[in-house]
Length: 137
Image (cartoon, rainbow, N blue to C red; front, top):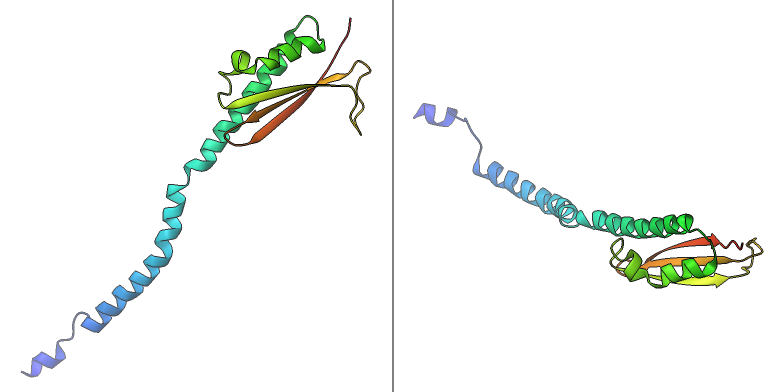
């Protein structure tokens, strides 16, 4: 019976319970931090994809304007007015507005005027604008 008291290998029940309580408290603080990142990590990727659609559409409008034989206001207005037909595949959630401008406070425009094209992504409410100078021949 003397050997029974001297054999103290292992942990006591109190030490095991205290360790489990500390691990539980730590995990309740750490798990929500990692879980929120896992569940919402797709949001920036989707926003970037929607922004690229908007940029692709505006790049197509600029490219079409540069390839026009006559760079007058009516040709670009006509193309952008039919945005869904001409550029709908580039940005399916987008709409466009076009405005013929002759003067804007603080801007130095060509004497022939300019055309302001604004494309709006309806899902993100992001807008992109471009001013085209009008050339007359």
